[in-house]
Amino acid sequence: MSHAAGPPPQVTVSAKAKSLTGRAVVPGDKSISHRALIMGGLSVGETTITGLLMGEDVLRTAAVMAALGAKVEESKAPEGATPQGNPIFKVWGRGIGGLTEPADILDMGNSGTGARLIAGLVSAYPFTSFMTGDASLRRRPMDRITKPLSQSGAKFTTRTGGRLPMAVTGTPIPMPLHYDSPIASAQVKSAVLLAGLHAGGITTVTEPTPSRDHTERMFRHFAVDVRVEMPRSPSDRYKVGVVGQPELTGKPINVPADPSSAAFLVVSALIVPGSHLILPNIGINPLRIGLFDTLQEMGASITYTNRREEAGEPVADIEVKYSKLKGITVPAARAPSMIDEYPILAVAASCADGETRMEGLEELKVKESDRLTAMAQGLSACGVLATAGAESLIVRGGPVKGGVTIPVQLDHRIGMSFLVLGQVSAAPIGIDDASAIATSFPDFIGLMNSLGAQISFADRRDRP
Ligand code: S3P
Image (cartoon, rainbow, N blue to C red; front, side, top):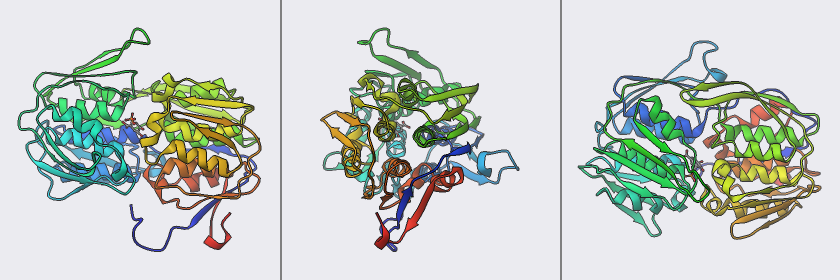
């Protein structure tokens, strides 16, 4: 991202909205978009991707797959064929084992998913790759993937604390791994499984609870032999095995809209009186919609219609109406299915009756920012009673004062969360830098304003 050069970014201010109404097309799923490009690059023949997220994170992965030898081409879609007229992406891959040494450093930008999945991939190739990212990504831990991947013979050299930049020298003979992951992390699971695709034999990963299973579903879409054992009791672990060295051939992929991006529109509609939104084609994978389940428990009117399947992923249209919410306790076991949604849930909780307790949040501290601290501090600055514990966040609903500018810290979801809160605060809420939003939701502000929001750019002197 271009944070280093040029004038300081403008403050973006969100002021009270009357109501949000209409039909809104949400951009493509970030997790599925990364995986579609990677699998296309590992397949022989053409993979056509419709609805790919045109966010910075995903475009980095597209550039990296090209740097590894895949052919990636963007073409204009026929009228009406893709949401918002987005381009169609075509990838011609090299087959398992066919990627080639990149000529330059792989820059993953802001993307933890891109960095960890690609590190897993290149760990199975007998060449050296160098990887870096922006200031946020260079703070995030990579040892969670270097530890299991090193067992296959790959070598990793990182900065202190297992941080980027990092050099990866892959193994000439990828071995099937078995890894019992201490955390429920789709990035860790996927890094090991992508390496495992290159190994002769079955690679297995277990997790304490299942994290999002887009890799497993995408593998099956490409006819990979994937074996899943769901936990049969709360103390049982999730287990997935993949049979390596398949012959992959290109497939068409329709990427559903991202439930994590839809979340900002859903919560906006729930808290701004008189709102009513229809959001077509949203991914409703059960391992992603913990937020919607939680909001329904809090009293939200959220309904799914037109349920169907796209590239092995469940999809539906979502209808959401303004609702009176009440505070609840969100159990730690639900965290993996809504790990990216706690910032926006904390915003909904600020507008609910009573207290919302969110538990099991330790992973929130190692996202694009320390989201636990960022939300507790930002909400407190807005006049909301919010307390962060070591692994928990407690938010008491009540009047929101606002009238402050929140530091975004290169974190798209922190930026969008406070712009949503600004729609109901007494005084407007500003964010110091909206540029990070482009990692996952490039036209967030334009779309919100087209539905009735009042988000504008302010001179630094006029900021809240
Ligand atoms: C992602 C996994 C999640 C999530 C991230 C996307 C993925 O992280 O936070 O935004 O696409 O695999 P975990 O590794 O904690 O599951």
